[in-house]
Length: 198
Image (cartoon, rainbow, N blue to C red; front, side, top):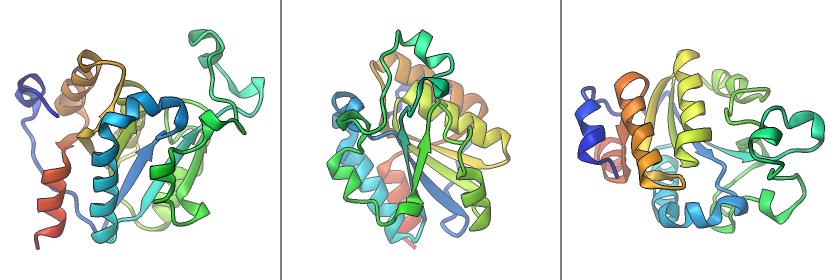
């Protein structure tokens, strides 16, 4: 949830438009299960709200297929990477049950869901102008995806209660940064009211 610190920077409010929005579910994989577990119900609720509002949903899966796609991540994380084909690389079962087709999966090998993927092409093809971001990690893949979406011209909505990272300090720092310069903050209740109340 957003604290009073991030609310200080939350000077802009807006609701997503379901006719032009898409939900991006970032890296809800077994590798991050302990981090994702506290927000799992909120993530499932957000997916359900978006499905009921006819908002398309895309799930990212972070993995590495060879040493050539590690980039700086191999050095930064001392080789602790998610390798394709391992249990760690699979989407958390509760989330995986929400995937309704292969076109909803976006494979990536770095923080941003837009880098060397077909995500923007998929979004442009169906007329998406806004993205709602949930998942893990708040301050890495979620934040990087949100920032890049903003610079690509998408209106960004960032969940405060369906994103998570290693601690509250990093989570809150991201919410403050995004509220200040890149994204509208939302949570399950706000999405439910904004998307399903009409």
